[in-house]
Length: 358
Image (cartoon, rainbow, N blue to C red; front, top):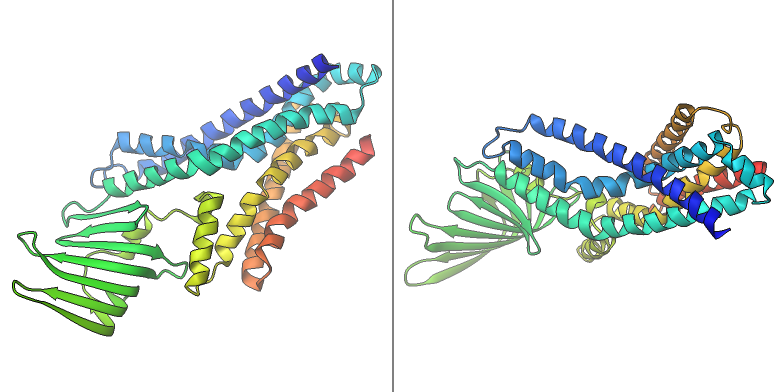
C-alpha cells in the first residue's frame, strides 16, 4: 500500500509542479511586458527590469500555489484516470478516501513550503525589488531618491533628507523628520512633524517642532501647522510602499498594532492578515476539490476539459474572495469572516461532492 501511496503522491506532485511552473512563467512574462514601458526612465534599463521581475518570482509562487494545487491535482489524478489506473486501484479495494489522503499528503507538504516562501523569501525579495526599482527610477536631475529600510522611508530631495516612518492607509504620512543642509553640506535645520499631507502642490505638516541651526545658536519653535515646499511628490514615496498582501504575517500583525496605537483604521490590513492565516485551508481545499471531479462527472473527459473546469473553479474562488473582501470593507464586516467565508464555502462544496462519489 505504501508503494501505491507513493505512486499517487509522485503523480500529483508532478502535476502540481508542472502547473505551478507554467503559471509562474506566464505571470513573470506578463510582468516583464508591463515593465518594458518603464525601461528608459532615468537609470531603469533592461537589466533592472529583469532583476525586478526575477525578484518577484517568490511572491508569484506563493500567490499562485492554491490554483496550481487544484489544476495540478486534476492533471495528475486525471492522467491516472485516463490510463485506467484509478479503476484498477478501486477494483483492488483501495477506497477513494485513501486515494484522496495520498494526494492531500503531497498537497500539505507543498503548502508548508509555499507558506515558508511567502513568509520569508517573498517579503524580503519583494522589498529589495521595489527599492531597486524606485532608486533606478528616481529623478537624478533633481537629486530625488526614495528607498525603504527598517527605519522607515528615506528620501533625498535636493539638499534635504526626509525620513517618513509611516504611510497611512488614507494617504497621509506619520512621524516625519526633515534634515535641511546648505550647499556646503552643513546642517541648517531639523524639523519633526507628527503628520503630513500633500495638498495643493505643497506639504502640510502638523504638530511641528522646528530647529533652526545657526553658527552660534540653535532656536526651537513649536507650530500646530506649517507648510513645506518640496519637489518631492507622494507618488514617488508610494513607489516603495509594499501592499499589505505582500507583507509577512508577523509584519502585518506588528503594523496593525502600530496603527491601532495611533488611532488609525486597520480593516484593510486585518483582512490581509486573516487571508494569510486562511492560506493552508485554501490550498488543502483546492487539492481536495479535484478528487470528486476525477471520480465523478469528469472521469471520462480529456485533460484539457479537466484543466478548463479547474480554471473556472479557480476563477470562481478568486471572484468570491475579492467580492467578500470588498463587501466586508464597505459594510464593516469583521475581516476574519470576510477572509474565511470563501475557503469554508469551497471546502463545504468539496465535501458535498466527495460524499456523492464515495
